[in-house]
Image: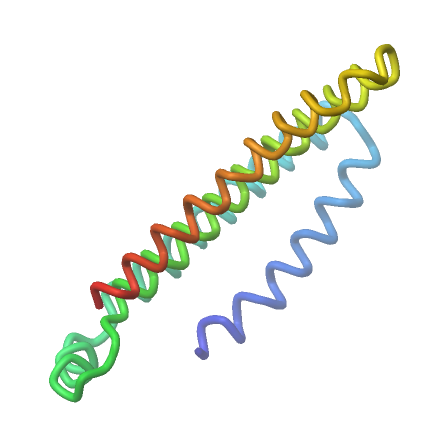
Length: 137
């Protein structure tokens, strides 16, 4: 918990700086943005490694007391987060294309909404995987 209390203000500050840099639209800003993203990725991997390599005693005690395995919960969180991000990207692209198609041919509404709905289904798959992981724990 202490790790999150330290990491969250840093993430907010970095995201604010990234938003300011994106307004400049220069090559220097792009390089700085790329370096910042790589640093955030490294930090996120560090937090994940810390969470996964937590004290083995706490995990053993939780298993002995009938608690939920922490690794299964982390896996479920990663499944939901990854699927949600993938679905968001898919809906963004398919939604934009659907709006473009609807502006030219309004009778394509049904087909366009089916494609956008299929893209949203990716998030449901992540939720199903998370439920299965929690059920196994």
